[in-house]
Amino acid sequence: MIDPAAEQLTFRTLLHSQMAFAVEAGLFVIRGEDEWLSTWEGWRGSRQSAPAVDWAGELVVALALGSRPASGYQVTIEQLAVRDRRLYVNAWEEENGGTGLDIITHPVHAVAVPRRDFAGEPHLVKRVTVWTDED
Image 1 (cartoon, one colour):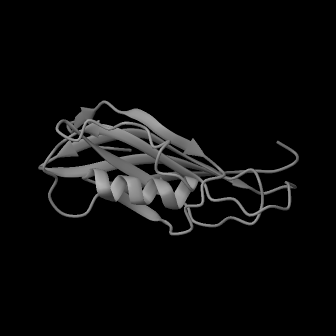
Image 2 (cartoon, rainbow, N blue to C red):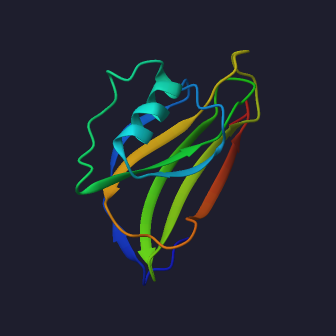
Image 3 (cartoon, rainbow, N blue to C red):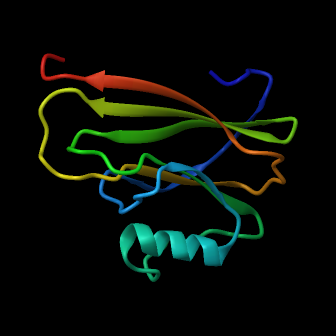
C-alpha cells in the first residue's frame, strides 16, 4: 500500500500485454522519445506503432516481469504516487499456479504519467496472486 499522504498521479495505459518481448525484468522510468521508441521496438518489433507520448508534459513508467514459462502471468500498475520527489508504484502480479499454455510470455504494463523530476530510484510495492485450476 502506498502512503495515503503521497500525491496520487493520474496515468494512461500505453501497453498492457502478456506477449510483449520485454525479456529484461524491471521497473523503468523512460524520459525521452528515443528511449521510448527503442524500448517499444524491443517489445513489439516496430517503432511506427508506438503510442504517442507528450514528452513536454509526460514520461513513461513501465513494469516488466521478464520471461514466464506459461500463459496466465500478468502485471498491472494499479496506482502511482509521489512523495518527497520519490515515485511509488503499486502493482499487482498474477501468477499461474495451475495449468496453462506451454508458451513463453513476457508480461509488461507501460503507462504515461505527468512529467516530474523524480529523485532516486522508484519504489515498487507489488501484490502477488497465484491462481490454480481449483480457483
